[in-house]
Amino acid sequence: MIIIITGTPGTGKTTLAKALAKEIKIKYLDVNKVIEEYKLRESYDKKRQTYVVDEKKLNKILIQKIKEYKDLIIDSHLSHELSKKHVDICIVTKTDIKTLKKRLEKRKYTKGKVKENLDAEIFEVCHTEAQDKGHNIIIVDTTKNKTQECIKYIKNEINENKR
Image (cartoon, rainbow, N blue to C red; front, side, top):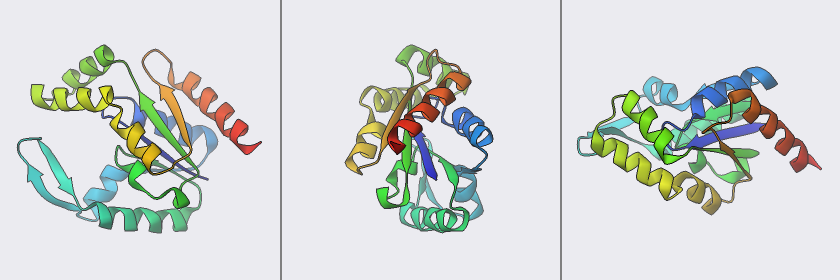
């Protein structure tokens, strides 16, 4: 089973992805490590304070990893860019704006970067883009739900989808 976990930075993707991978005993893949390992950073966008990634090369590498492992959880706000033909389930993490703002400020994001990510969450950018790609989506609210509650919900949704 190939599961991608996407969402605005700070919504709990990594915490959830690692815990879910451990719970269902499948490999966890951190896309940031793939980007680093394969040197996929093309440039640095000073205004947005982020690296620009070669998404075509990234997708090719992720597809190779999918073929290699067969069962995989892919963690990244970019993971929903994969074609639906390679993905069984797309989990979109969401959280309320006040909680997200606190999480991003705790990470020492600049005001501009906080605003950009809050806007992405308000406008549901990851969710909308995942829908546009045709993914089979499970939405998980990480505002108050504990990781184990989220995992239980996901497992129930996966079982429902199998019926």
